[in-house]
Length: 386
Image 1: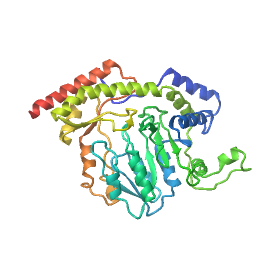
Image 2 (image 1 turned 30 degrees about the vertical axis):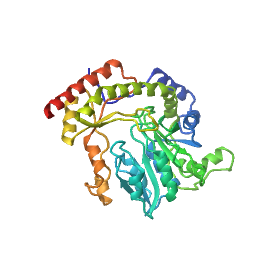
Image 3 (image 1 turned 120 degrees about the vertical axis):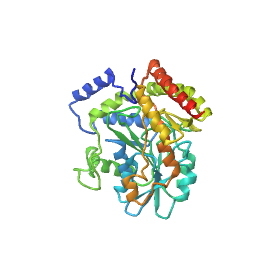
Image 4 (image 1 turned 135 degrees about the vertical axis):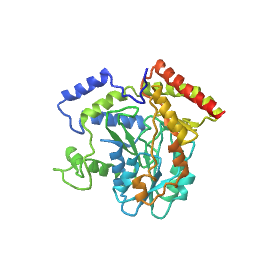
């Protein structure tokens, strides 16, 4: 039996949802399903307003436009993240200020962030990793102390909570992803959460999302015609995608429970190798966090051991993969003036981390296959280092 790293879960209910959406005769944005999903996500998250978008990348771009990032403005973020988190800043003329991470959580912590705050800093952009979350009490306090915007890249965090409050709802704005690799998916999609009453975020967000026009105000009868009134782009997803997402949301709790069972079995199986020192870290849920169990990782002692581990798992029919390549040491990061040696915790995490297969509705047989084959490889490592 070969075990993939990930596989999408499309059910008969999902297929029927797409057929039902086609029957409405409207496949463009802001149809029946877009409105329905936005309402559901507003109920799930408790956010003041939810706007469906074509991706989390586009939600992040909208967030930077809403807080008016301009040339010379600085935004603090981790280097251990996807390029979209930095692209949204650069596209507005801002400068990403990459900050090192906590080795145990792989996320920003307030102590490191405060060290890089300057007079040019306009926002802190936290990234919640793998269904785990930052200490949001500390982040909110730090942002308020320095008068900064707080934005949450919660692409991997739908359903995860900090102190029983949904991640993505602590910052002024939050961004989620419904890409095919996420816990619930519509292939490509995202949303923007507006959590702050400050400014005119809601009205302006709808204008930005609809190509910079006041189309929503026109549809609601507030103006006689709509016109170009602001910057913007085409960020509204097709109603077909929203129909699929609406169907997937029906299974959110079931999906989370299955992923939790897989994660707990992995933790039980591989914890002994932490004590033996063969692995240095593995997925652990932070204090005050209720996880959605988005991914599961191990960290080996060196890059060479990690690369060898991945090769051996593939030979054994189990697909394990690395994760983020540090942005600060990428070609774009170097153009921004960063050096490979900067942010040593980030470099070490990227060099030693490996993600294990984790997807919806893994069977007991699939879990056992992964555990048995990886245990054999870890036992070999123990012998080699004894």
